[in-house]
Length: 298
Ligand SMILES: Nc1ncnc2c1ncn2[C@@H]1O[C@H](COP(=O)(O)OP(=O)(O)OP(=O)(O)O)[C@@H](O)[C@H]1O
Image (cartoon, rainbow, N blue to C red; front, side, top):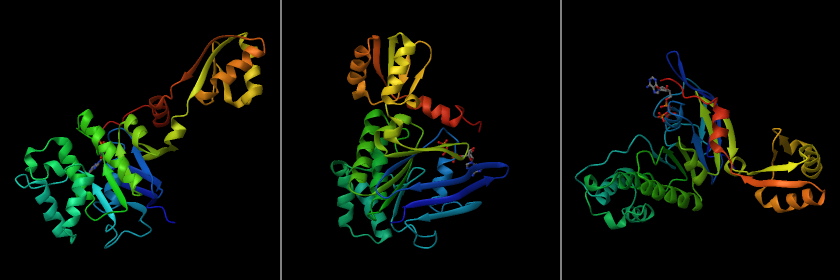
């Protein structure tokens, strides 16, 4: 099966500035893919190229197995750059107008309002909606054509924590229903919560692509004495490549649930274990290392 999104050497230049640089991006069917990067990294530019809103300088795009062209967005829903709605119409009437324009049956409006959790406020005017509700209406609109692929640019931007949680839960539900979602974000925690894989972008380049579970794999920090003997003991147990020492403690790539077994082995070998704790995965550190730590100057 084709990947819903595939780009090859996708590049966008604005004068001397290379906003997106030779980007090879693959989003697999059924996954939530987080496109993560600081402000100005090139996320929106990439998504706009995918949606045909701007032309690439070079490189190629395939969406749902097709080259861009007439009709290539029929099975794609998008939320990008704040959708525009009529302020004095209700949420439902706004969706009805869009459905009519898109040739979608009116019954679908009812369904997407339910999916977006807006049924109770569907009769209220758009200009009475909170930011979170406006964003959910945008999601509902993106779902009108029952798309296989959703492309969402910073879907929780500007929302309060409750609004963010709502949108994240809705996105997760949509993916659990079998849709593929590509979303951009500058929030590590958000990507960790809702995405299956993450592509990290910095200065227009994809610097890493990882599964979120890979990113979140925990390790152990152990203080034992004598340290050198403990290092050797653990190396024999889990492989020398998986144990590192900073002179004070040993760091072990191992799942947290291995802690009891590791402790027993050390004690059994006659070593004194002073401290053994599961290290929380440091996503931020990983991100900073991979992106060089900086934000580009716009
Ligand atoms: N129309 C344009 N003309 C000139 N430069 C542009 C244009 N659009 C974007 N850029 C520049 O391209 C770079 C990438 O911008 P882009 O909006 O894609 O970043 P982003 O990762 O989406 O960041 P943000 O989260 O701030 O939107 C930035 O330096 C931006 O200033």
